Image (cartoon, rainbow, N blue to C red; front, side, top):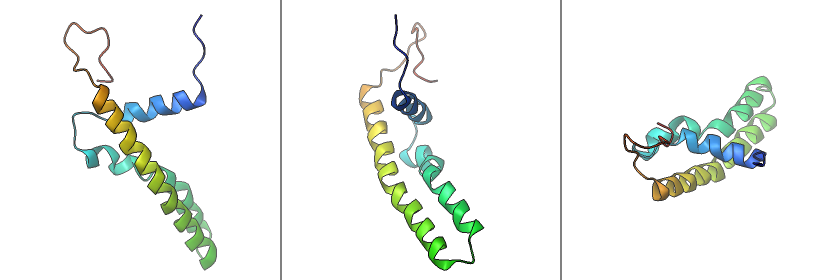
Length: 96
């Protein structure tokens, strides 16, 4: 019997499915890099009159984008390293 996937495995599977092996690096992460920034941007837009909240929210969002970007770069490097080009006889197409 196969065990259920953990939340971490689901998350990494989703992240890997968003990363392409054949395209340029920036084309992969141009929208994916700023995913953790959106909630903090919304907070900054809601409390725009409180400067401290706005700046702290934007700062935290940008700080979270750095390790997130490193995770994306790492997962892309691992995916490119382990990539096997599918053939027309392959059972799995590797996400394409």
